[in-house]
Amino acid sequence: MTCHYERLDRKVLEAAVPGCIGEELADMFEYIGEFGYDGRDPTVVYPENVSARYLNHKLLLTTIIAWHRCSGLHDGRVYQG
Image (cartoon, rainbow, N blue to C red; front, top):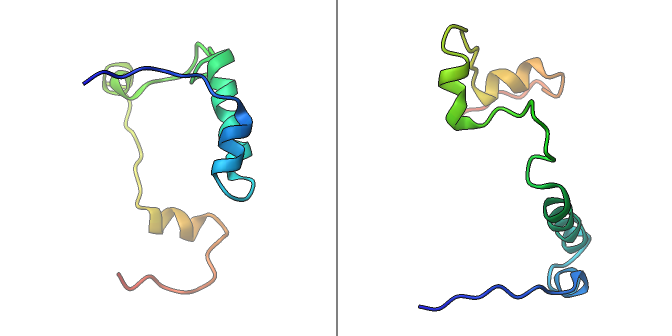
């Protein structure tokens, strides 16, 4: 299988994806192209470095339901999943 990369004008993506989503995707790809995925931020911690970097720290993990209840976005309904 042969694969090749072809740069397209952002208007192609904007026209192909409805609403403002195409514009947002085009903006995202332009940002990544100019600054990289992480914006060249040296403080970004990548998943492969979490266990090594935070080996001596306790990571507090929670469920999405518990987070939602504490977020102030909870409207009183209880998830019955």
